Image (cartoon, rainbow, N blue to C red; front, top):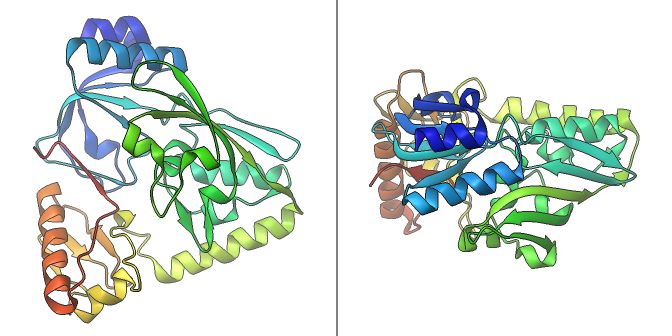
Length: 299
């Protein structure tokens, strides 16, 4: 498998026993058996086919901002889209983005082009690909509000393009998860705006994040989805869990919806804390909190 990956992506783009703590915003996780960084969509397609032909598990990772990798790691191939597949360009009010572009970079690029609509994403730590998979959103904006088209790689190796409506966007979901396709690139339809006004809005949102979110600690952002009719952070606070710790994993004292790594937490400690929060909140309110965080390598 190593030789195959090196042949397809180049030896300089393949790693063995790569620590996943270096590729997740939680800063935890054991080693991936292989990590590969494809240069383009064709390489990506070839790598996926090679994995499937060999019966080798694989998983797509962007910035690892919504991922909890076990301490044992992942016995398969991590296909890392963050560094190489990260092109962006503008044509009129349209923004063309590859899956590996960080949302922060995309929002900054839009601002410099005088395009408004991506301000909400300026503080989200994920990539465009991941944001499309889960319809990422913040401060009243979501990806579904700006997406025009999305190009994906289907499990059978074919390329497919979807319109906004065909993406079946919902709250923290899209059709991508169900069909297990891979986002390659997207076209966003934005609006003309004044760069300074866009900058001011982004600064305003940044100040709100700094005031309300524990950005000084490693985390995966909001750990839990918003239950219908409730706020996860309020339910956790009402269950008496503000500041609750398991080892170096903690429910943030600043925002109870965030589980943070205070510096030396293990993935197991974070997982144990999440489970205890779910149990106690359910016991206190009858509401079961569903995680936004995805688990990898736990079976």
